[in-house]
Image (tube, rainbow, N blue to C red; front, side):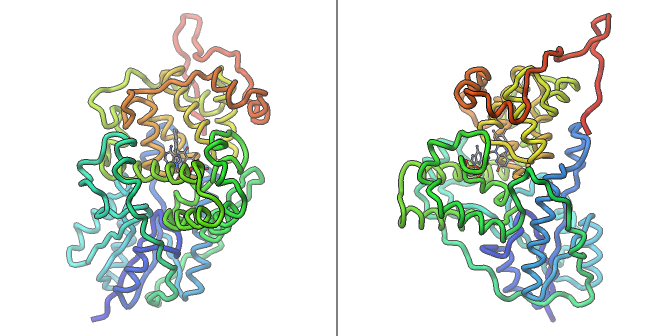
Length: 441
Ligand SMILES: Cc1cc2nc3c(=O)[nH]c(=O)nc-3n(C[C@H](O)[C@H](O)[C@H](O)COP(=O)(O)OP(=O)(O)OC[C@H]3O[C@@H](n4cnc5c(N)ncnc54)[C@H](O)[C@@H]3O)c2cc1C
């Protein structure tokens, strides 16, 4: 009997070093390739007003269009389906599918359709192959249930492990099932945004990787990485990593080449160190599952913060009394990207100065960030809100001091018009009752 498979693309929108796709290609005679956009029920329930931002959507569309183009060179094509459970169910029934594959990884919040299909089609072989990580589960020197409680402990146990070399892109895929209709590529075309420096897709990712290591930026990364603005102070790998347009093992391979050909120093090590942070949060999300979005995070106690619609709105729009925070938020809203330093400051302000429930801030960033990654976003928010992996409990940044250090001339604040907003944080009526305000669209 001929073996017919579905390969379900998720955050692995590439052909290069796509272990799950390579495996799928080796197992079946015919293959249907699908991508299912996340449903955004969870996001809208956090008052974010819309599903994903235009910047995120554009980057995703570009990545899918690039994948589609690359697949066409292998006589294959991608199909987009909105409601995976129903749509894939129909495909399984209509085409007598025998196998379904996907990359393993951060599916804990979007796994319902996979699990439901698995339960419904017990005769179909469901396989997950390791995702976009430095290490395979078998390489970890601990069971996932024993994941170290802090990054430092995790780093000490893993940093000397060998990162396996990336696999080459497949040059042959099983043919599609003939009468399945491909998703029209024109659907993927979207408007441009001149203020955005990122173009989605494997092609742009590879170009960026090469450009980055053709300069000497990696040699000074540790000194520059806390910058706030521009493309040069940090690697900017995150948007492509988030959608899997590039594999983290490919980055490590290129980093090692730079170290052997140019220089190996504290800065080049620090790029690896930061990728280990990413690695930690990948396993952290897999281990903690739905606790990622719980108010108490992975701790037992609930924070004392709450939800104030007007404060939330001001933070989202960048009209708080804190110029550095405003500038960062306006940068995020315009470009879909914010520096790591900026993210720490706006999250600290959200939790401490504004006393807001951290989950709303995390959800807003999930909506806006073109590099949104479940583990890194929700894990970092938990860390800063004191309900995650920070052994110190929580961190509050002194916003004035941080401004003096990272934006002493206030050029960043001026560029992004973060000027001080003198209006009170909370509006009240004459009887001092809070006036609710609209949630930003
Ligand atoms: C509140 C908050 C939310 C965040 N949300 C995300 C997110 O949704 N997606 C995301 O990729 N990163 C997130 N980060 C981590 C970090 O800010 C970004 O990875 C980084 O700014 C991306 O820019 P870069 O690629 O130039 O990073 P670089 O400084 O060049 O670092 C290289 C790579 O290391 C990884 N990395 C660096 N810092 C971290 C970190 N603190 N945690 C995890 N991985 C890290 C990223 O993969 C990054 O691409 C968040 C941080 C905070 C404080």
